[in-house]
Length: 324
Length: 177
Image (cartoon, rainbow over all chains, first blue to last red):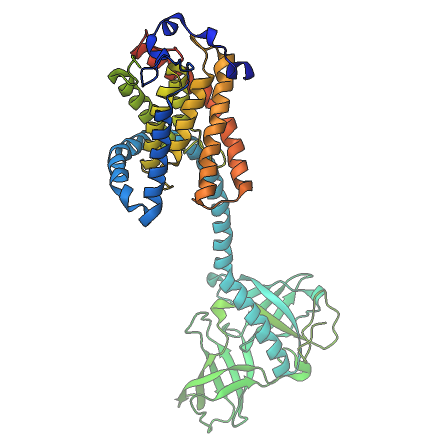
């Protein structure tokens, strides 16, 4: 670099050396100008031009140069955008590849997330209902004053068997025994027919063979509840009252009458409400139709009434709502 | 001076080279920016011109190229800054030029020095004019990146420019003036 800077005059090319123009300055004097050095006037003019430009652009917010700027922009702007149009797809390729991979990963992740959320959403109602059922069962234990073993309906007997039974997932290990009352948050469900070590078969009160002692709440009149064998929304029980002169009012509540030692039914479990009353002249009895509180088609969580303090493989809902 | 400063082919070739450099610098290299810094292609073309024709032509064409760079669309700085910077670049590169076709070891230091001088003048003029008002630290960082990038691109741009002018004016090129 330094030797470039201190380049001796002898390194001039012969053609230049013979060029008389190099030796003459602009006044025509013979005073030789150092080769490679531009004329002072040119330097001065250019520097002044630069200064003028800067000044012009500095004052009045560059209004004086708006015209030239616009002119140059009109020429170079389209050229730049044309090049940009050509270049953009090319430079976008690595970006596209990168983002393509990233997007594929994103899609996988989002799909997994979506599936999870979907399944959560699908079961959220179920979970909420279950929680509600446990809540109701606790309230029932409190209402009927009995300890309950919670159990879940795992199977419903087929309609062609003409016997309305369900299987629950609690058996003798849970402290269950035959002829125990089965309730849920709404009311009476049925009674335990037989137990295995882990399951129990429950006869629903709507079964045609089921007979439950019932008591009409307001008048304490007693009678017998017979199932009709229907499970769905139109499941009904027939109430035959012992006192044939008593006509129960519509909307009266029927609860269980209760048996000795609470087997098979404990007393005071709500069963349903009176919807209509028939008088049968031939049989000389009053027959009331009871709409049960329990939706038998949608049975899930039930509670089996057990003596307080029963040994169980699961928590027992005590009367005060505590679980032991 | 007997030899004309600017012949028409020379001016047209210079305009062409500067225009291409300017458009590429604005459009193509904005995608290849390193930390926001794009290589000064126009500056390198001016270096090539000055290497080919000497400081006087370098100054004039540097001024013109700088003026274009000052006015062309993305620019919003005070006009005349690049004009001044590239004028000085033309002068410096022309003064440092050797006679005959320069070898790489000769012109690469010239290009480096020119790039340093040019970007420095542009940056310093910005500092003086407070346009735009940036800190010295940021300025030095940009300057360092610019130097490296410019040197890398000089390996391509300067030979191309020299080749272009050798084609336009085979008999006059590469004579330092």
